[in-house]
Amino acid sequence: MNTDPAPAPRRYAKGEARRTAILEAALDVFATAGYRNGGLREVAAKAGLTHAGVRHYFPTKLDLLHAVLGWRDEQAIRQMSSLDGPVGVLRQWVEAARYNQNAPRMVELQVALAAEATSADHPLHDYLRERYEFAVGFLRGTFTALAARGELADGVEPESAARGLIALTDGVQTQWLLDREHVDMVELVRSAIQRLVTVEI
Amino acid sequence: MNTDPAPAPRRYAKGEARRTAILEAALDVFATAGYRNGGLREVAAKAGLTHAGVRHYFPTKLDLLHAVLGWRDEQAIRQMSSLDGPVGVLRQWVEAARYNQNAPRMVELQVALAAEATSADHPLHDYLRERYEFAVGFLRGTFTALAARGELADGVEPESAARGLIALTDGVQTQWLLDREHVDMVELVRSAIQRLVTVEI
Image 1 (cartoon, rainbow over the protein chains, first blue to last red):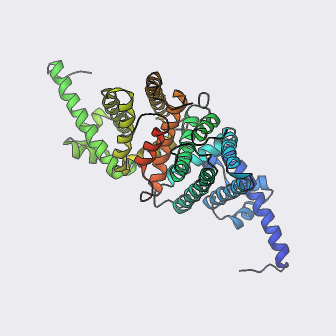
Image 2: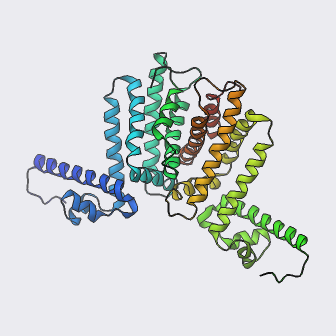
Image 3: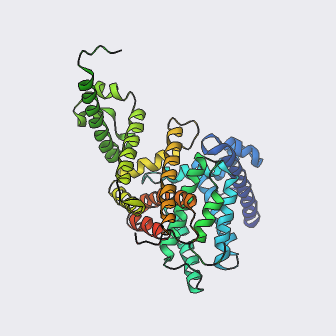
């Protein structure tokens, strides 16, 4: 119920700014302390709000996680969409692996969530399923564009390449968490992409 | 302390047979009911033993899980080692994906365990790490043998191919659990292997 007397546009802008501040703080907290140990109070402190202030936007930690992941996806998609063609998208995919190599808590969060949310009764199951579907579609489009330019390696099929690259990227995260010294996520992702295309990645 | 008067070899054989019966029952229970819902009592009933009888061999459910996974690994390794050369190993890798496609609970178990046990304080962390190291070494050897036969695709490096194939196989399981209708684990694994070698898989 709306009892706030402020004019709508200004209220909207203020709310949006707060929401973004919370998401930035939450990403930081989750990526540093992990999802289990990171709390709404810590997020509130970092965003300069009260606990109740954060709960106004995100009633539960799960709501906040959901929003953070969606927000990161949006950013990543905006970044990739602004790139110069399909080769740029694949190079950005490698850069995302480089980013992850410096954000172990974020990687832990993604690995744990992906495993948990495969259960049909998990609250983020549908979200995760849609997230994968979207990513598959996006990469399928990228590989299809490369095929049209004659830059796909022989015998590579866009759908299978898209699913395979996402699978490899996920699996490499697990191996990296187990042995950070010896597993080079960036190089494993780069070389996998390189095997799919004829241009240099 | 040994107070059993039976001669050692017979006792050993009997113990081994019971141990195997428990492992077979546990694999069945975990693969059907999952690790969380599958209990030692159910395993005992299936193996024709008492609950205490099972606990004599495996004091906790975690001990039993550890043993089941080790036992499955041993079987898989024995099977792969008996195969006719490195191409046979890769074809068997595809067959393992086919087996998994009919054992969703086992796949759930593996995905959940891999995510959980990436935490350094998880009781199965070291085991999982060694399991991956072993698998990487095994596949690296397979790809090195293929390289010597001139059957590796251009630019493929054995270590990276080994880690990449394991990663893709893991990641494909997550996608399959999210969307069993549209994700074909067997074909995704097969086509990924096919891109690494020049012989037909």
